Amino acid sequence: MTTINKRIIGLDALRSFALFMVLFGHNATLFNPLIHLSIIGNLAGKALAIHEIIGFSGVEIFFVLSGFLITDIVFKYFNNNSNNFASLKLFLIRRWLRTLPNYYFMYIVNTILYVWILKEKTFDWKFILFIQNLNYPHPDFYREAWSLATEEWFYCLLPIILIAIYNFKKFDFKNSILLTCILMFLFSFTLKIFHIQQYGMHLNFDENIRKVVFLRFDNLIVGILGYVCFYYYNTLFFKYKNRLFWLGLLILFPTVPLFYAAYQNNFYLYHQSKMVATYCNFVFLPTLGIITALIIPKLYYLNLDKHKYLSSFFKKSSQLAYSMYLINLPIYKLFFYRNN
Image (spheres, helix red, strand yellow):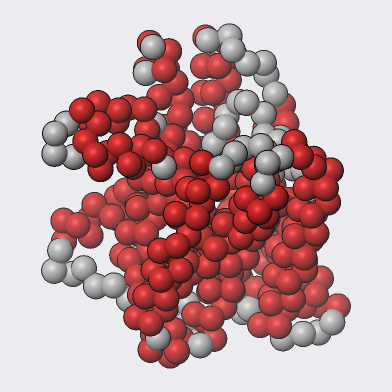
């Protein structure tokens, strides 16, 4: 058994890659001039055609990485401390100190920009409590906050359920966290089914599924399960890292074309194709999570000691990923979109 006690350059690289995917997905129109270049124009055009898929995939990578790394903290607090409630307090404080200051700062920035300067939106207090998209579409304001609300609610519910199971049923810690994952997955999956039945033919995948808190516990859970495998089966984790990596790429190969086909076939309103709806609602996003979990073992043991500049780049960009994720859309809106 082992835990993560230092920065892992491979995971930094994956987080950096996810960041650039999200930035590209959010700001793809800035790259339109590349289409007219003789050498890379064709490739740039194809990338721009799937910029939303690239952006979606980056967020799913963030979810899996977040689940993987946060579970390391959960294990350190709860597995080695007999006072579960003190551990819960410490866990939440540490989580909030890392995320809330930047979140609320950018909430103020977005309010100043969209409400007071551009006068395009109205003040929405729900963002203060992360309840703006619990079981309904996210407002058209502070758009990147949807994923942060998902993570905050997940990481508040996770330790509470874990403590209840661990103390009530007297399971060992491993079985307690596995049962916690199962219960949270069943809750999210069942709610998704009712959600789809409620919206019926008017379902919008991006707004009504992808950005709704209680429907998006899937890839956070995938990250947790990935860490459980790493913690309890570290020898196998290392032994099969190459096979798992290639398996992940093998699954990835048909995934993006399938989703692109769905995107071309009435992506946002599914009244024409139940097959497209089923694939996007239940298959695509969890598949991206599984692919990410499969490539993590290879990246975890990646060695870039001979490439110090590359290692430094991944480390710095990884450290800035959260801030860049929060700030990129307001910058784009203020300096580019407004001038068009």
